[in-house]
View 1 (cartoon, protein in one colour):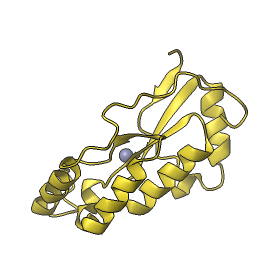
View 2: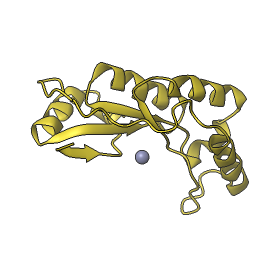
View 3: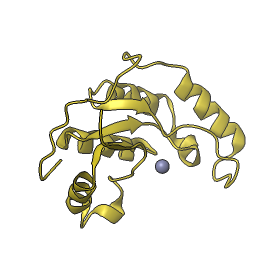
Amino acid sequence: MTGLVDSHCHLDARRFETDRETVIVRAVESGVTHIVNPGVDLPSSRSAVKLAQQHECIYAAVGFHPHEAKALDASALEELRRLAASPKVVAIGEIGLDYYRDLSPRDVQRRALKRSSSWRPSWACRSLSTTVTLTRTC
Ligand SMILES: [Zn+2]
């Protein structure tokens, strides 16, 4: 594989609503061949998968940031599992603990991390495509 990999880029964020395609093209023209866009909650995980399906160079991660840990219930976890089945999902994330800002209670964060870590996607190891075709849209 040659080229650059951006392993953590929130291209689905609202701040890119007006120039998302321009940003993607600029990244590709600068040598970025693969971009991993992680979700931070259910809506952004859905958006990450959708964006990945629209652009060959973009891949998704699905998960709940520790700040959003309180929203990770059984229903949300089931949808994450469904989203993770997409061939463009290459990681589970964002997940983890954030004791710096403490925007979610620590016990809630630990419970969410345990839930997020208690299952494995059907793909044990999925690699990024090595045959990305660079075009104006990716
Ligand atoms: Zn992030």
